[in-house]
Picture (cartoon, helix red, strand yellow):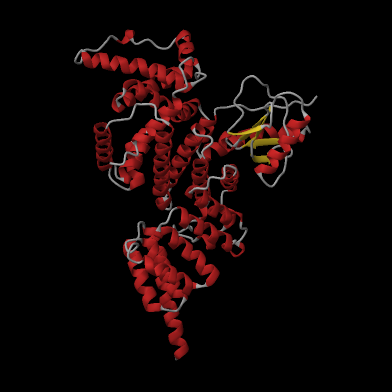
Length: 421
Length: 123
C-alpha cells in the first residue's frame, strides 16, 4: 500500500473521533467539518515527509482546532485574512501536545456525532445521507450514486438535513445513562438503515456493497466505544452475516438468488466466523434483543452446510421469540416462510393472510404470498400476487426475480395443457 | 532459538482497507513467509479477529471477572499465549479460568477468536 493510501485510510478512520471532538469544541457542524477538512489537507502535505503521528486523531483535533479558531477570527474581522506564515505547521513540540489531548470525551463525542444524524425529525433517507456525509465522510457524488439520484439532489438533501439538525439544536450535555442508551438504540437503528439501503442495491455493481461495508465499519466503531452492549454485538453480527452472502445473492446476470438456492461456498466465512464469535459474546449477557435474535437466525442458516440441513424448527422458535419481543407484520411474514418449510404452504398462507391490510404496499408480502399460492397450485391468484409484487419492486433485480416466477407459472400452464391434450 | 513476532497496528486503519487492499497486503506478507517456510524457519502464523470480538478474563482477589473487549491495562506485560480449538467462547473462558487458577498472583487473559491460522505460514 502506498503512503498516500495509508494516509487516506488513517484519515477516514480518525474522522468520527476527530470531527466529534471538533464539534464539541466549536458547537457548529459546518465549522467543525471545515476545520477537519483543513487538518486533513495539512496531514496530506506534512505526513509524507514527517511520517504519520502516533495518534492521528489527536493530531487532527489539534490542527483542526487551530484552523477553526482561525476561521472564526477571520469571520469576526469580516473577511480579513491572516498572513500565511501565521499558520505554522506542527513542530515536534506541538505534536507532543496533541498527544496529550484528553481522550475521555471520545465516546460521547462519537455518539453525539452519530446521534445528530438520527434526529427523529429527519426522514430515514436524510438520516442515512447525513450519516454517510458527516460521520463516514463519503463524497456527495458517491452518496448520490449509491442512492441513484443526481448529485445536486443529494447535495440539496444533505443541506436540508443539516439545516434541520441545526435548528433542532445539537445536544452538547453529557448524557446520563438513560439518555445514552436511548441514543444508542437510535444510532443502532440508523446504522442498520444504512446497511439495508446498501443491501437492497448491492446487486448493481459495487456502490451498494460499499454502503454495507460502511455500515459494518460504523457498527464496529459503535461496539468499540460500547464494548458491553449485547444489542450492538447483535447488530454487528447481523450485518456481517447478511453481508457474508454478497457474492452468492446474485447470479452472473445480476438476478437475485434466494437463500436456499445460493452457492454456500461463495459465502464469506471470515465474516460469518466473526459474527458467530460476536453472538457467542452477546449470549453471555442473557439480555436478548431483536438484533441478537435476527443474528442468531442468520447464524443457523450460516451453520447449515446445505439448504436441506437447515434447522427450521430452531429458526421457527427464534422467530416466535422475536414476534413476542418486537411484534411486527414483517417478522410474521418471515416466520411464514419458515412455517411453509415445516408445515406446508397452506399453514403459512393462514399466517400471512391477516397481514394483507398492513403489508399491502410491501414487495416481499406479495412475493411470498405468490410463492405460497403457486405451491398450492392456485395459479391465477399467484399470478395476481406476483403482478402486485412487480409493481412494488424496489430494484430491477427484485422485479426480474418475480418475473421468473411468472414465467415458471406460464411454463406450468403450458405443461398442463400438453397433458390434457 | 524460537522467537515469537507479535504484530501491532491500528485496527481502525486495517479495518478500513478494502477487500482488494487487504488481499494485496496478505499477498505481500505471504511472499515474505514463503522462503522462510521452505527453509523450515516458520512456525504457526495467525491472524486475529478485530478486538471488538475479544473478551478478557481478569483475576481479582475473589473470582476472576469477565470483561467485554480486549486487554487494556498497561501495568502487565504480554508473556505468553495459547491457541485452543474449542466449541464456544464459554469453553475457552473455562480454560482461561483453569490457567488463572494454576498461576499465582494477578494477571489477565484476553480471549480473541482467530480469523485465519496457518500451521506453517500462508504457503
